[in-house]
Amino acid sequence: MISTGQALEAIFALISPLPVETVSLRAAVGRVLAKPVAATRDQPPFAASAMDGYAVASATPGDVLRVIGEAQAGARFAGMVKAGEAVRIFTGAPVPEGASRIVIQEDVTRAGDQITLGRKLDSSTYIRPAAGDFAVGTTLESPCRLTPAHVALLASMNVPDVVVYWRAKVALISTGDELVMPGETPDEDQIIASNALGLEAMLTLAGADVRLLPIARDTEANLRTVLALAEDADLIVTIGGASVGDHDLVGKVALADGLDRAFYKVAMRPGKPLMAGRLGDAVLIGLPGNPVSSMVCGRVFLRPALDAFHGLAAQPAIRQTLPLAHALPANGPREHYMRARIATQDGTRVLAPFDRQDSALQTVLAQADALAIRPPNDPARAAGETLEWIDI
Image (tube, rainbow, N blue to C red):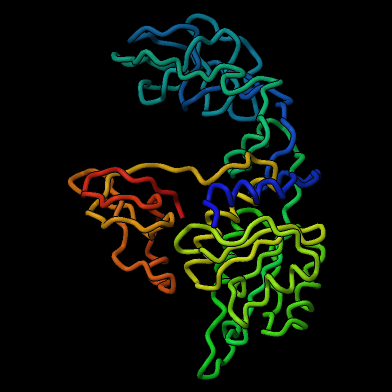
C-alpha cells in the first residue's frame, strides 16, 4: 500500500491540463480562467456621487446656496458649480465640474431654489473618485475559478468573453449485480446505487461535465461494454469492483484491456481498495464500493484531480486545524478520514468527530461538514488538542 500523498501525486502525474476555449461571460461562472483579462475602462469611469444630496464647491455649516441644476445617473449636469451654488445630485451621478463634495440631503433644508446647510456637517466628501475601484489595464489573473463576484467584476471591466479551460468529461460507472437506480424497485437482495448520484453531484459542482453510465453487471463482457461507452472521457471513475473478490472485475478487465496501472491500494480509512492508471486516452480511477468510502475518496482524490485537469494547481485539499471537542483513542496503521462537524464550545470553534465511523453510514456523512484527519499510528488524543481537517 502507498500513502494518500503518494497516491495523489501518482494521479497528478497522469493528468495534463485540458485545452482552452472562449465562452460568453454569461456562461463562465464555475469555469477556470485560462488567460489573464484586462479592464478596458476605468471604474467608476468618472467621479461619482456616493449619496443623494447636493454637489457644492465648498460647504460651511449654515451656508445658504442657490440650486442651479440637477445630475442623475446617466445624465450629468453640464455646467460648472461655483461658490454659493449647488447641484441636486443622486447616487451614481457624475460629479459636476467645480464640486468638491456632496452634502447629503439629510443635512440640507430646501425652500424653492435655495438650500440651507445644517449646523453639523460630517467630514466625508461622498465622492467616489474616477478609477477608484480599478483602472484601464487592471487584470484578473489566471488561473482562477470564476465566481459570481468575478463575473460581475469582468462585466464592469466591459469584458464580454473569457478564455477558460475545457470542462473535464467524467464518466461514472457503478458496478455490481446488487445495484438498481433510484426509483426502480429492488428485489430483496438488491440495494440502490447511491454512490454514483453523490459523486455526480460532487463532480458537477467542481466544474466537470459528468455522464452517469449504465450500471456494469458482474460479467467481464458487460463491464467491457459499459467501459466502451466512456471512450471519449477524460476521466473514468468506476465505483466498486476494485477489490480482489471473485466478483470484483474492474482491475482484471481494465488490465486486460491495456490499463497502465499506477497503483493499487492506499493506506487510508475508509478507502483502501483504490486504484488509478491510464486506460487509452483517459485517466481511470477505481473507487471502493462502500458509500462513504467512495465519497471520501471523491473528496480526497477526484476533486483535486479535476482541479489539475482544469489548469489549477495540482495540490491536495487545503488542511486546517482546530482543537478537538472530545478525546479520541489511538489510530491504527492507516490514515483515517473521520466524519466530523464544526461545533462551538465556550465560544471557541472545535472539531467534533462522530462516534460512529462505519463506511456504510450515509446518515453520518450527511451530517458532517468536515473530515478530521488522523495520521497513521496517531496516539490517543485529548480534548483540546489540535487536529487537521478538510472541508467536505
